[in-house]
Length: 164
Image 1 (tube, rainbow, N blue to C red):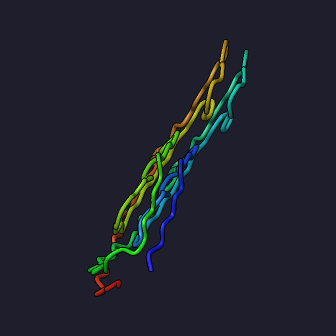
Image 2 (cartoon, one colour):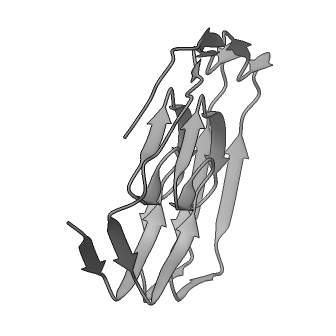
C-alpha cells in the first residue's frame, strides 16, 4: 500500500537551537543536547513596536559563568531501508529564523551527537519583524573571571541497527 501526503506550503517563524523539521519515511535523530544561558535587557519583541528613550542594563558579573558539560552521545547506525511506500509533497518550506544547531532535513537521514553550548548577553533583546528603537541606551557589563567553560564528554555507542 502506498501513502501520499500533500502538505502545500510549510511556514515556520523560528526553529530554535537543537531543533528541526524532519521530512522522510525514516529519521534517526539521537544524542542531541543544547545548553543555553541568555541574559536579555528586554527579551523578545514582536512586530510593529516603537521604543524611545529606553535604558536597558544587563549586569552579569560572576567568578565562573555558565560552566557547561557536553555529554553528547554518538550512536552509529547501519540502516538498510526498504523501498519507500510514502510520497511527501510540498510546495515550499519558509523559515524566518534558523537558530544555532537547527536543521531542515528532507529525505532519509541519520543525525547523531549534535551539541551546542551558548552563552549570550543581549543589551535590548531580540527584535522580530518591523520595530523602531530610537534615542535609547544599552549597557552590558559581564566582567567574569572565567566565562562559559565547556567540558567535552563524547560517548560512542555502535549498535547494529536494521530498519525495514
